[in-house]
Length: 494
Image: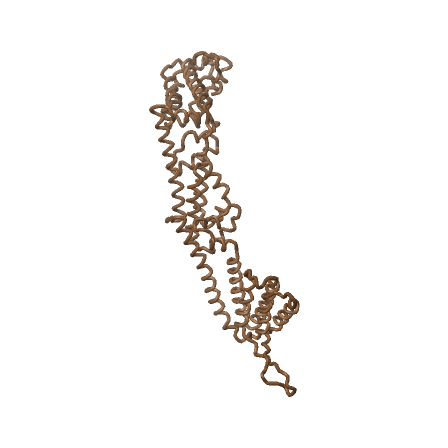
């Protein structure tokens, strides 16, 4: 089409002659043929493989994209933009665009409904999530209790050597006692007494009249009692208790020593029960890790409408798994639906939506790793959004260029064919089907027009090109046969 953008004021027929139709009967006829072939598909190079894939995706979703989204050519994009503001037929272009946008909206909405059929307001979904977070802790405690109640009776008679625990406690006391000792040290002394037995003053005096002391029976004697002591130690070490300032590392080490004593006693008493005990310990440790996490703390404290921001972060996909574990499948789906609805509401242009879906690619894969159908549909949504973002920077210059070059190209095409075949009806048919219908305002919304401005009509172009490239004698001999083939080709494009 650029070949016809010359400012020179000549008629289409003269332009055709200058272009070289007279050379049809000479040695340059082959070049003329190739040129005419391009005239039948002037914008095909702008209908890229990427656009072809986008178009296929959109059509499979029941969307007929606007013409301007189907070409990289500013001229094609400008043509649709210009035509939209023309009287009578311009409204047709606008309606087609509106229909495409509505269908795109339905495509997005259907994805939300597949994430979970019932969508609630952000406040309702957020409160569901907060309640689920509270229930997580309650469920954790109940499950832990049930597991240990199953294991502990089997270890009731296990022999326990508490001396490593007593030694560890005594070391802590000796190391930290004295001036300005931590206030929490008194509790460590209490645990020490629970292990070795508390010494109390006796009311009975010695023969010399001095006070005596006696040691009470230790409070921690059985496996279950030792487990409860460990739980108390763990509870104090896992929370930021000001009374234990400076003792956190000491308590963590003590917790490890108690665990080693329990493991040794259980394994020596009953190896199978020992395996169950370790499973219970792992479950408990995992649960406490979650309860201490920033995610759990945020879920409990943020406002309901901000719940999705806690677990759906494009820079931290791993938070998704933690959030799902806390909330449970049903509530998690409600939260992901809330996130998706929020994206559609705030990313209000195709370009913004495409960028958001792209930037959240990793977290989307994590959110729906067990639902590949949703991942595929979100990928398709991003593809169509990318397509719809095309052609929005059209300038007045693109529109003017389209009017000038487009009309010149079609008139020259008709004149060339007219002179070559001496067949006015054939020239009019080609110009009408490929040109006037393709480049007119009405044609922009027609299937023929959309085809001409994207893929073009390469089959017809090659046929005409081959005919124009023939020497004069051959053309004369085949002048009846070739037009018949062209009629058949063009009729098939209706």
